[in-house]
Length: 331
Image (tube, rainbow, N blue to C red; front, side):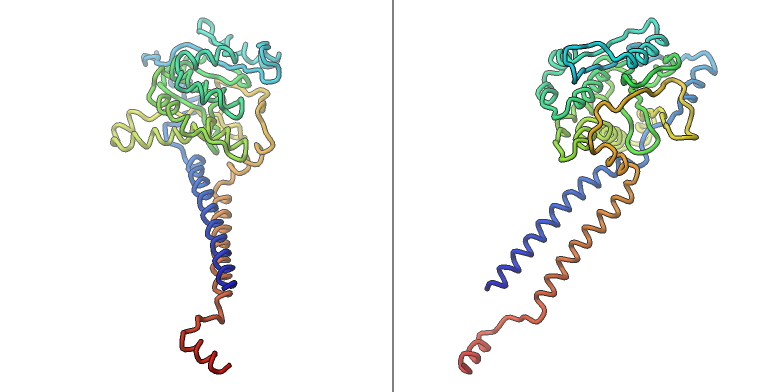
């Protein structure tokens, strides 16, 4: 009797472990598509500029002439003075967009905007585990409500941004891994931003790793998942709808020999880096290998449980009533 209890306990532990690992693997596989080939139309920054300069550009400018930037001073709340290097980078953008509206969103302004325009989201906004998630979500709502161009404070401008105003919605693409949310362009109330912002509460999970919480609950992994979901929905409406509605990815690949940057520059960043940023940065660059190793691990665990159970059962058989009677008589 003791043997069967022990066998049942070990079997239950194995089953639970396999189910937990299967759930984790399912979530990991949910991440994998984020790092593959992305939907949408790819444009280098040079292609954007050439399309504008080749002839008199008669396309309608659908993106408003507004620059949005966000500064939440986590270390010294209430102090809205930008660090000197970021102020210089900010100035590089205002210099090339003279005559445009410029908005620098502080913590107070940001919360008031969410409270006034999207009160249904305020509890999520206030409840985010990490402050950078409020910055992530805010930029999406700004794109939805006002439109314009959002630029992280660690990105500068090197050229007039007018050529970017002709694409109803665009994001930046670092060329590998997930899409980026450091620079965004939008026509107000575009259906992509409606889908993305409406989906934020459903993705508001708290994961064991801070990087995953930031990336998949509100950051660039989340943005990429919504990007793919948006294009998938278009594809279900037919080829014509997909061709007419697909969005643009502007390349910002920092690797050597990549397409030249025309409009933007990169300055000091990393303000929200945590201990696991580099770990998941490496994972994001090696997703196929990580998925393979995870699959091998789950397979070995399952195989080990089956082997252990088979080995424990070897040499044992249930006694029939007749066998028990014969053993008692012999005694």
